[in-house]
Length: 465
Image (cartoon, rainbow, N blue to C red; front, side, top):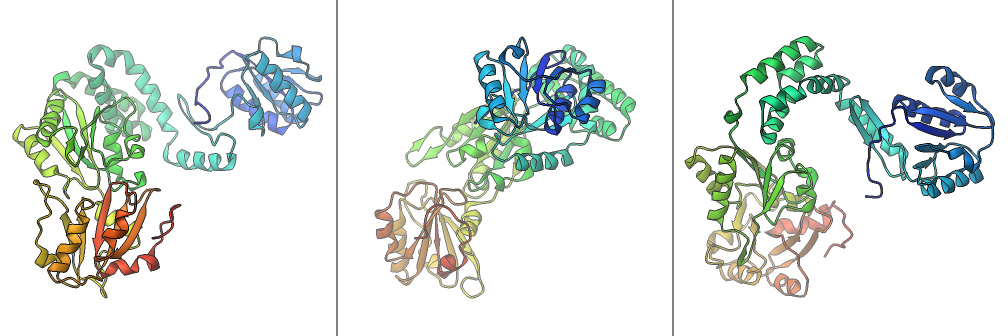
């Protein structure tokens, strides 16, 4: 990140604004809202700033800026239209290690003003690092539309009960669960509807009824989709952000993992061909043990948990041990990769059915129902078939498929690294052998593949192949 976001406490702190025009007035208003003691230096004072002097008790010095003016100020803003003055302010502040903002000149700034969403004591800020301030303001407007002002009152109520809750619920993890339930339940709704006294009574009663040992762990089996983070479901995102532990596999992209709660424990259990970080049976046991320890666990799986994700095996263990769980579907790789490659899985002129198969079995062989797969007018999608690609093509041809049947391999579909290589059963293995293919990959077979060049819509830096 270009700027590290930090919230400064400016209450009763001496801050200096150089310039007294309309832009300076906006910065004065922001600093005043944070409780700063503000001094303004300018040769000419605008009527707007003169009016602010009475409202915010400003100290006005009608003069030119000189380096000695910085004194013991904690923060300085230069909002003049004089480039030489702005450069002098920035240079002097830098020499004295005083944070400085030069309006509309990011190169001279050691800090910048973000677009602020004020729901005090809840504060959110959006910044583009000075690259696109209008975009930052548009994003602020979007955020403001979904965060009503009553969230500030909800935070005040939580602050009133903070010490009492801490005394009653000793374990930090259980306190976090308690507050999440408060912020997403009836107490919050009472605050939002203006019934703050009722909300206070409800929170008090909820705390009295709270039994620390009653909060049992739970497992959320979550489909992470094919790779693009914005293809997650709302429920998946919500559960990821409240989980204490995230157990994830190798098909989960770093961008998706980054959406989990920052302080959640993250455990990698990925599997690669002949290299399993943790055997499946051990993963099943791990999920159960974490839940029995009172943890809320997200088992994050690429694609959909119930399509070649072994999700059924994992929840069997949970059911046997009486552990609560939820299953959140994800966009499976077949749907996501085919869509982003511009290859419809079904099409009335090409395929009236679609079959999903896995390219390797427990003994690492490719032993499929080739007669069924070689039937015409269908689409075949093969997961985990890269290693066995040549045998797959040979077997289909041997069981009646045309050697000219179109086939595609999609690398890292839906992401910026997506790559689509097309060919026929006869030619694709040779084409792929000369390429550095990066997993995960998906194989699509059928005449629908011929639509790829016509319907391809998702653009990456890679040319179509």
